[in-house]
Length: 434
Ligand SMILES: Cc1cc2nc3c(=O)[nH]c(=O)nc-3n(C[C@H](O)[C@H](O)[C@H](O)COP(=O)(O)O)c2cc1C
Image (cartoon, rainbow, N blue to C red; front, side, top):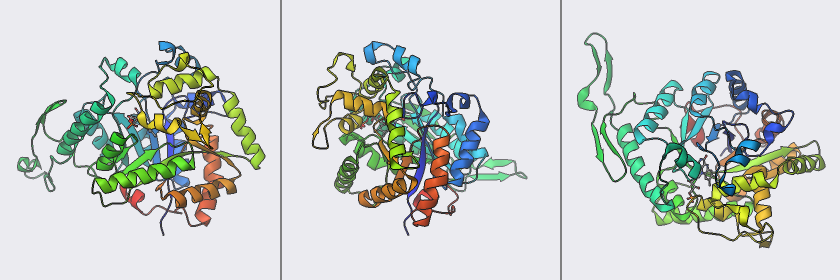
């Protein structure tokens, strides 16, 4: 029977997707930034909950669009500081046996050679438990940090295609059987079986060979999250799992339908595999969960939410009337998130205040407040109704809300036959296909 797949949706910073969550008395995130033990405890907890893995989002720059300054990002710890998720792969893998660890690694901040080298090194060390969320780099602050000119939206995807061409060439450079490790003959590898990669394209040049031993998965599991038209085509060409944020079930259904149509157009036969972001908010009763949801939202100043929305949508919203509808505007940043956050909800147009508030509370991710029973039922209903692969589950308070989910919701999903009770695969790819 098909299983629901769960990834814990995390960020290596002071907050996850709820602004000021670090200020909660129970939250351990800030201390966790200087603690290997924190991440290892979390990894063991997720493995106990039979999660396929963790999925680290990453924005390697500061939000600098709102009022054209960085003050709000720094003051509220709004996606700042931005710690590198790559070292966490080794740290979390060392404490577990099955848990996959997918990291976001931006194509703007890394040359394809260094991306392949880092990811494949980690795939070797973890015996095949690595995933890569391919992002082109929509954040202006990232480009400013690296001293780069940010390319326009569609050109970033053209560059991304060439980027992947170089990555595949590097991953295929070492042919099967090339590694001999023949001590007697002093032969580590057969040079005839290691192909030279000579690439001189529009955006990249390299002249080298594959830098790392063929890793257990050959290449990391590829994830991608761009959801504009151009983004969907790129995702369907390259990603094994597409990740999406939709603020409501209707958006999830619509995206699945769009992706299936685009897949047909591209002649792609395999089923489209999508995980949607969700944020469970648990309570002993529904009223308690709703109260908790309200309290989390009330803590967030509107300027912190606007800072986040401005950065993701690439528009300085400080000049806009908060109570006017948020119309879809052209943006060179995330068109996918613009489409998800604007438009119509419950039969009327969403205002900027509503979109910003929702974005501050959960980055647009669907919140599911309720008792463990209600949350489990809703997840199963969404999974069946949309035909998605599963969910990227983002916590509110770390790590207590993750522990509550594992202890209270996971057993219900397992009892209903929707979630594995043990791992069958060895690699992340095998577990996601199980
Ligand atoms: C659900 C979702 C998650 C994303 N996660 C990240 C991320 O962690 N880091 C990042 O730099 N960009 C992230 N992005 C940005 C996308 O990878 C992409 O660059 C951006 O959305 C622009 O493409 P689009 O207009 O096709 O959506 C995310 C986008 C979406 C929709």
